[in-house]
Image (cartoon, rainbow, N blue to C red; front, side, top):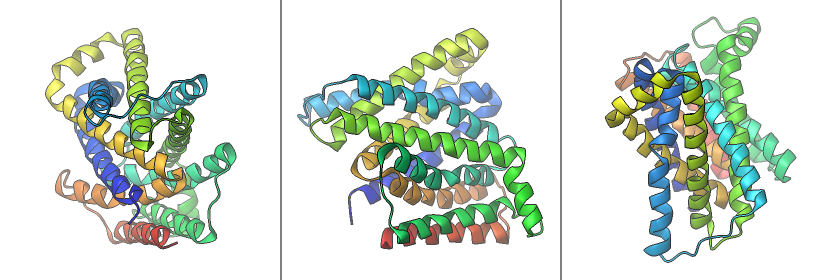
Length: 300
């Protein structure tokens, strides 16, 4: 098994854990505050991770450059706004469906990877990604009679558009992060990914602090007051991001994000066991199609 596969599965699990914690926090902090904690409580851990790789594992520091800075800033801003849209989505639909809408990202990441990086996909991989997206479409219409009209309504409604937009912006951030890490040309994918993560999360923390100070200073106070639960979001977020960054340095973004749809399996488990949200037959079939898409991607 190639190394990027277990790393991606670990990333998907940690991302699902982080999202579940953010959904729990949203009622206490609001959308901006619940989005901020993944960066604000995560960046010190990301910096410690880089220091450990340097002083314990012996990796040398890569040299930063303007290309890296540009891609890191684009990816960081894109991830902030995608996270805000995803957290807001949880208030519109249940946890599983809200996450499912954003999972159109692999196709969008493939398109962005093709346009920006010239990355190619095999016909089998494209077919597997499409099967996964069909699963997302089934989940989106699971609460209404199945018809072309309902499908069109489900995919063009406010909730769907926010979810699809979230997936698109996450796709942009993923391609930007891969580009940033590759531009370093450092000692290896682990250190390149770690430095990218540390720089990006530090930038995101500074950006959001300024934004929250300008818009609503009370949110900053609430973030500090909820430090116990908020810090868990930060830990889960930075560990998941470290895995994502490493996997995307090792493999094309579209493949990593397509395998990352296994997160929906974890999502349905969290939705059922943690939030007591029930899943109907169509949602279960949609989840099965997503798993088939993942297996097809690995096979091809």
